[in-house]
Length: 200
Image (cartoon, rainbow, N blue to C red; front, side, top):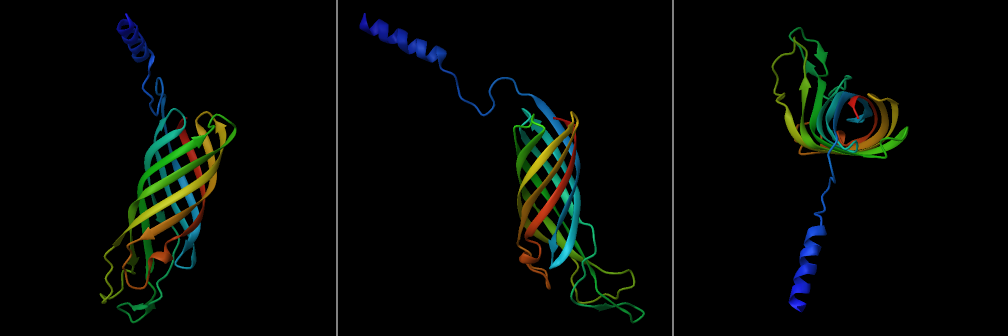
């Protein structure tokens, strides 16, 4: 009899036990995309980085997506090169990166809320010379690097389909071996402005 009672309780426990998962119940799907502007320092100069990101939004709170960004303003090399007419010019810097973006939104239904994000990816850096530049010993092949960029933002729900985010992040670059620049030239804090359109 005791064995029967023990088996009964074990079966009851198994019946009512539920597996714990990250997402309980039905998953609500959404998604968004939009432009981003970042104000930062690149190679000890003021830099404006533009791009965009977006992805799959899970239960209003978790984003799995991607993005890409590039330097929009002119930042010049330290070294001058000579064109075919004998004039000198300082080549301009090309700099861009992108990758996987994971983001968490805290209390996203509130008018003002916060988000925490992480970009993991890579990029490339090179110099852009004028069309009249002579071929020089400079190697303009893009130099690849690894990038890690955590960020925190405050967001405003403007409409059901539109949000504005303002925050700060830190861009950490590693693996840059191009002459005249180093990892620290591209690793810095940034102020980020994002416009987001979609189903939240």
